[in-house]
Each structure stands twice: as C-alpha cells, then as structure tokens.
Length: 158
View 1 (cartoon, rainbow, N blue to C red):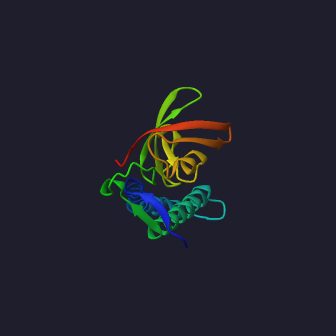
View 2 (view 1 turned 90 degrees about the vertical axis):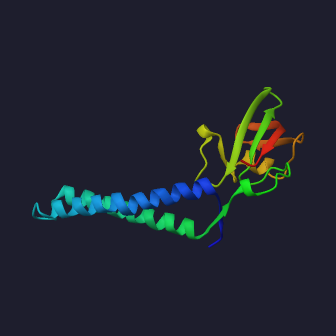
View 3 (view 1 turned 90 degrees about the horizontal axis):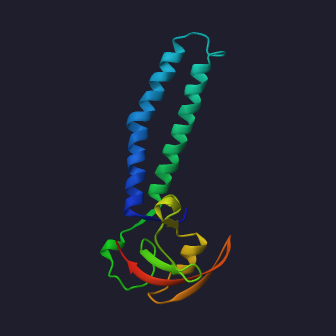
C-alpha cells in the first residue's frame, strides 16, 4: 500500500479516535452485547443485533485507522525551512482575482480536509493547482464551478 501524506495534527486526531474506539466505545459495545444476550432468544433480539452491527462498524473503523496510521507519511512543516513555495501542510493565502476576495487555506491529507475550517485536501483541484507555486504567482485553476484565477499572497509553514 502506498504512503498517505498526513499532517501531525491529522495523525494525532486519528490516534485519539483510535484510542477512544478501543478504550471507550469497544467496551461499551461488548457490555451492550452481554446485556442483550441476557434477554434470551437471540434470533428475535433487536438489541443484540443492533449491538453486533455497532461492533462491526467499530471494528471496521479501528482496522481502517490502524491501516492509515501504518501507511502514513507524517509531515511536520513547522520543522521545514520556509522556501515560500506552496507544499503539503503549508497555509497559503490567495486572492481570487475575479472577486477580489482573500482566502487562506491549509493543504492537508484527504482525511483531514474540511472546507468549513479552510482545510483543503491535497487532491482537490485548488490544492493541486497551488502546489509548487510561490508568492506573487498567478494561477488559473479549473474547479467544478469553472475556472478561477488566484494570486498567491502569502505562504506559511505553521
């Protein structure tokens, strides 16, 4: 399996979720299954079947997170020298030339992406268009909504 780029923050969040699933959620589900078993006939026991389904989802998510973490290439941009070039993990401020609107984005891994928090997936059209660019570069990016022209105003490795 190929390595998955991930920020330190993203890896920490996955580790926290994994710990919660293993140490809190898994024991809760096991207790729910045990309690449901006490109610007798398992064939028509909705609580039992619901708990088993939750167990399947929980165990699946645990395996998914463990696989992601084992294949993660954790990149800490704060330890890199700021070359002024947009790279994975960088926070970039751009100006939408058409609307004269300024926006800051942090380029992160797929699992960390959240547009509401201005976290762009490295595989998104905007991030792909900005990677490798420097301050004062102007780039035209094709997005699902059409072509957008951005000017790179600032690049930080936070």
